[in-house]
Amino acid sequence: MTEFMDLAPAFAAGLLLGAMFFGGLWWTVRRGISSPRPALWFFGSMLLRMAIALTGFLVVGGERWERWLLCLVGFVLARFAVQWLTQPDRRAAPRSETSYAP
Image 1 (cartoon, rainbow, N blue to C red):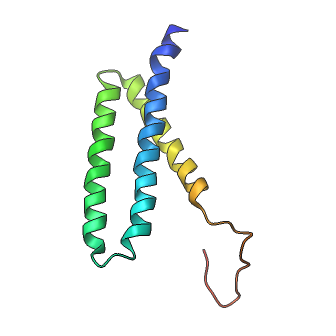
Image 2: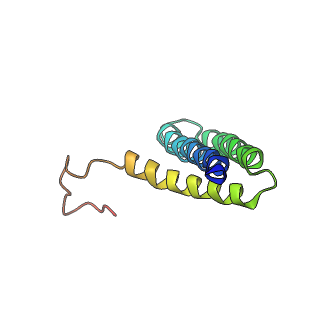
Image 3: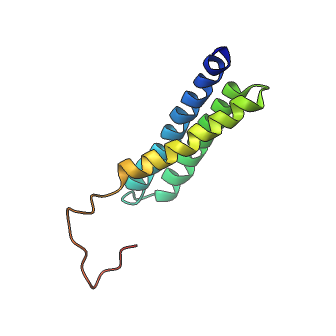
């Protein structure tokens, strides 16, 4: 039980870091495409998101590979959660036969 209590915060931190990283990416794309200077948005966001994620991984992981692994698993699961939460509602508008939608 103590092993679980020691590693659970690493998983939770990975979820939080992943939600911040991929949620920030989604937010940046939505803001950047309508901006007069999209390169500034994308580059600045990338630097900020990478700095926060890497610092978080270093703080959480420390010298234990188990923490690194669980943090990474949480990070990847957060990617799927953000992808699922931010997808457009496919039932709202039927696809047109002339438009391409992946």
